Amino acid sequence: MRTYLVAFPAFAAADRERIAAIRERHDRLAAKLSPHVTLVFATDVLDPSGLARHAASIDRPAPFACVFRRTRVEHDPFSGESCVFLVPDEGAREIRELHDALYTGPLAGELRTDLPYHPHVTIARCATEADARAVAASLGKVEIVTRIEHLHVLAAADTTFVSADAIAL
Image (cartoon, rainbow, N blue to C red; front, side, top):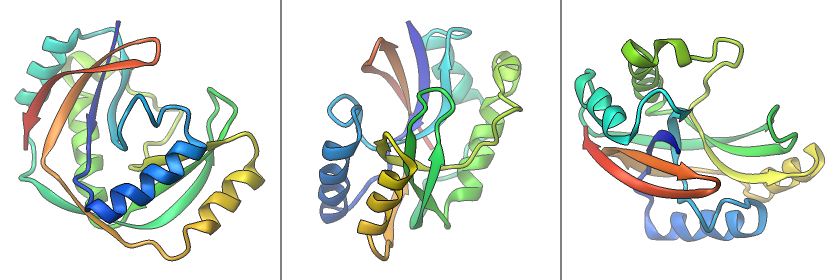
């Protein structure tokens, strides 16, 4: 079983519905996992309770606003897909600092230095870059205001994700 640590932004109902509609059409994980920001990627180094203890032990900010105003299309080197990301302006610094703080101690050896970390919420996974760019363009101007209030430990087997713990900011 793999463990992850994510934040589920608190989207307003209209934004949540808009994102859900896009993800239902363009993201195979939409039915399995709510829109999220990944802070710790799949790891076997810590079990869910160990990851929760580690997350609780780091310095964490108070709950913070996160505002998404941009999209970004990026190639996923693992799946070969082109992904559409919502990218935060406000809140990006706090997310990066959380990510960096989490990849210390028992997770220090897990940090991928070959892939830069960019805070984001994936809203589409497309077979081609052109398809991904079309999805991104269909969004028009984006301004989605959310809050990040908790970190969530997820346990995963295949593509089934189970919430194992939550850590308040």
